[in-house]
Length: 104
Image (cartoon, rainbow, N blue to C red; front, side, top):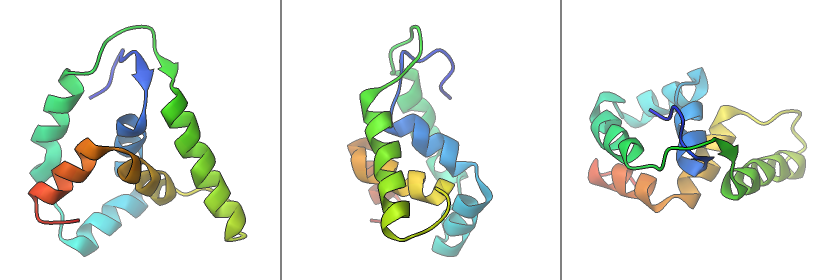
């Protein structure tokens, strides 16, 4: 979805986390099929600017928020679910995708 995009952002963190076992299990528990959201994700990825890839400020902030949540909860590591949640909260497009399948 995101080869050669100019900036890694919330959308990219979301996609990376979505492939993890924990997030796939979360989708299954919520009755979400990845197939149901693949098309809008691909379309959105196609519209992202191409260029020399940098880890963007938004992505950095989201990773730091995930770390802060882990520290506050006295856990030992940041899970993909933590990154998934932070990315979802920060990206209006992702919220719209889930809203379109009746999940908020």
